[in-house]
Image (cartoon, rainbow, N blue to C red; front, side):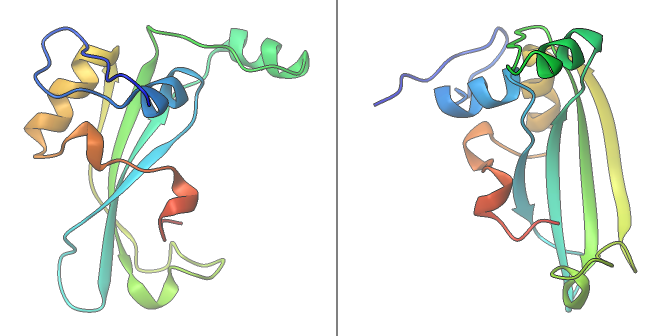
Amino acid sequence: MSTPHHPADSDRPWPTGKLNALRLGRRLVTEVPASGPGRRAFVSVIPLTIPDDHQAQRQGWKRSDRARTFRLQHWDYDAEQIDGFDHDIGAVLIRSATVAGEPELTTTLQAWGLRPEQFLYPWQTDAP
């Protein structure tokens, strides 16, 4: 069983496995209420990569970084387009933010009304 991690300025813990995934540069996703019928919406946390990440990848490993910068994106999609290659047809970017570090990530998620424990690995969701 994993022990939750509490980033500074946070009252919501990140599950350890999810925090490690973010530090290793893996995207996390949660489904949120869509703008209307026939729509689906998702918020993604996308760790940004730097040259050190690319160097590690060329060497066959993943670099963990506690000080990553993250991009948050809230997209609203046409539900009928989600499963295809053209999932971006009719997609609307609702909001986006770039945050530096885990504390700012948690603070921004709280401002968006989201909790760390809501986020899943992309393969556990229908997110494109």
